[in-house]
Length: 404
Ligand code: PLP
Image 1 (cartoon, protein in one colour):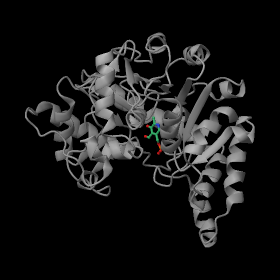
Image 2: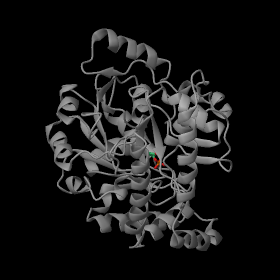
Image 3: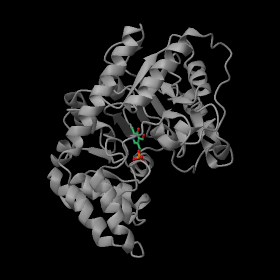
């Protein structure tokens, strides 16, 4: 997968702007792109989900917690009804737990949709999207779909903390539409200090918004930017149940912000009733006080063990606090990805900014043991010339063919 060449580092020259507009006009109107599409587009062959080891899409192999599974089973007999009251009750529960007014929370079937809609609402051909590089690509595709210029700002200290370079992101445009901050960042798993994000929020000009994507925040001890929403600041926060909560396939997420900001996002989409199974499972998950601390601990143990393993073999790994990290393999990451896939171990994709690194999602103990074993073998072989990934056959026939 190659991102359109319209992406920019630093300033937005006129030439690049025109190139961006030309490249993206062909893409205008595209549906939103998610981690699932990006991960599938990057795997070297059609890999059924029940074959091999999939540590390529930042999923959670633990799946929904026990109480969520029971809640799904219990709601099934009511599946012939819309149960709108349960949907409202569920987002009100989240609002109560977070100390928010109910109208500051909107639930969606995953956070991909509000992410996409926020970019569409605030970015435009004259108001760029500002993103870190490497970071999650979905907002970039959203910006492409509306011909909004994209300003990519390298992560600061790429060999060390690999955090968002907030001063450079703020300097990238005097009229940004959206400044997207993924915290912890996908793919590096690294954390940008709260104070710096707050500074970004306090500094953006009128008409711009900071979008803080907290898809992976539950794996960390970091303070959430939801507190800044409560203070009435110019920020929208995304949350998902796809990561720690293990509900990527069941689909649930939130956007959190002031009613004024949400009013700009909501009319663009999101009125579709939510699946009642997802509402029931997400509600049960929110009510389980042990879930976050228990899973956070399990993840930390597995992640640290794997990072230590890789470092002990001489590889540089990002200081992740999340469920994924980047490992520098010292040669084209796509070759290593292809060689691992030949062993039916599907590791994450490569970001153009860091071509010698691959993203690894932390899977189960046994999955990671298989990963370690295969990785050591692959790194001892000559991977030169291995085929770059081919696009998943289904994606070739859909509007997502541009991901190849
Ligand atoms: N944001 C980030 C940073 C992600 O990595 C993902 C998925 O991987 C999402 C948002 C969207 O997840 P979902 O639509 O499953 O909630």
